[in-house]
Every structure is written in C-alpha cells, then in structure tokens.
Length: 148
Image (tube, rainbow, N blue to C red; front, top):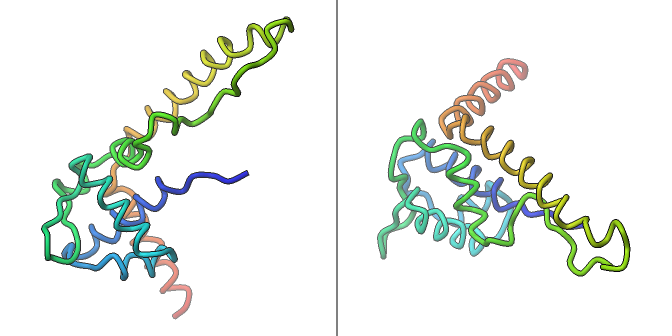
C-alpha cells in the first residue's frame, strides 16, 4: 500500500524556505527532501496556488507570503492535498447491495471517516509552521550537543 507524502514534502519545503532567505533552488530543496526537483517545483506551484508562497519568473526560489507563525499545518495540508479525492480515508465503491452490511457500510463509514478527518484537521489548525521549525532547531541543537 502506497501512501501520500505530499503533506510531509510541503512542510519540509516550507521549513527550508523559512530557514533561508527564500532564494534557494528547487534542486537544493530536492537534495534535502531526497527527491527529484520536479516534485519540489510542483509542490511550490501548489503552495503558490494556495497563496502560501509566491514566485517570480526568472528568480530562483519562492518566498512565503506571511510569517511562519501565521501558517498552520492545516493551511499546508489543504494546499498539498489539493485533489478532492485526497481524503484521510477513502471508501470502497460498489459494495454488495444484497448484503446487510454491504448496503449500509458506505453511509456508516462516511460518518465515521468524516469525524476522524475533522479531528485531524482541528489538530493541524492548532500547529503553526513556526512551531515545527522551532522544534527542528531545538532538535538540531540537542544533536550537536550530544556529538560534542
């Protein structure tokens, strides 16, 4: 089973932009993420469409449109998961209508999955990009202290 890592890549990308002056290339970001620069350019395009970053033709990099303290993980999640099919859980199609469970399962799962999606989104809305980047900086300081 494959899983979607766009959300994690978006947070990684924005964390790098927040830690820099914004003029880092997609190649540099891709090296940190360990992916192809095309993946990063597509992600930056999605983040720009969501007005989280802005780009300028002919200028390397992207700049965040607002401070990291004003960007929630929910903002990033919605930008990264811009396809309506990208819900936390998907429901299988065409269960057997002649089965007692099959004829009712979709309605029940929609109710349960909606509550789970809502709970996740409520949590993501409480966390800012700045909190993530601050935690990353603290983790790096601890790592360096241990090494020294």
